[in-house]
Amino acid sequence: MRCPLCRAASELVAMHREREAFLCGVCDLAFLHPRHHVTHTEARAEYLLHDNTMECEGYVRMFEEKIATVEEQCEGISSVLDFGCGPGPVLVELLRRRGYEAVGYDPLFFPAADLDRTYDCVISTEVFEHFTDPAAELVNVGRLVRPGGYLAVMTLLHGEGCDFSTWWYLNMPSHVVFYSARTFTWIAGEHGYELVYSDDTRFVILRKSDTV
Picture 1: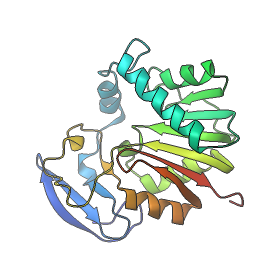
Picture 2 (picture 1 turned 135 degrees about the horizontal axis):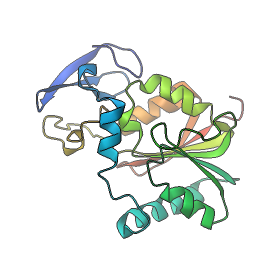
Picture 3 (picture 1 turned 180 degrees about the horizontal axis):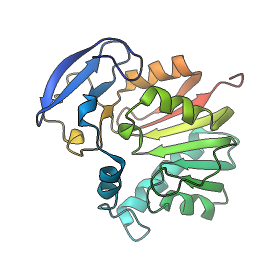
């Protein structure tokens, strides 16, 4: 099976609830067989089950923490795109309250965002694991980041020795690709970024080259 990120041959490493999980030896991406990808209708229904609103204190607190990290690690930010904002653009509202020019985009819920411009920072929270074609999506997202701008990604990272047959992050049907810290190092090198921050668990920040 070819890796959907780097296209290298990958090895079957586990069965998770009768779904085949593969691991790439080049970029360290783990992924499910394409036959297990869900439809847009199924994905939309899954998202709507979440309580992702301003009334959910834990959800808001998580975003406040991520915004604080971005502000600590990134310079010269005024415009921000929330890529994959979901049905309730909480992050956009929190950013606007802090004075940022913030826009939310989601192909299922907010498809009308301006994607013909670039932003100082693109933030994507709990989105990258849904990409059925991560190689193509990284190109699409990269076009939205200005030269010298930032891409901040939140997705749970797998580590060495991860047991994909029992890992809970595979329980959600629309989660189909899984990254590690090494995957984001590979992405940085191949897509013109510098890795400027990683908590080694679920949040990374990449800085796009000034010349890309």
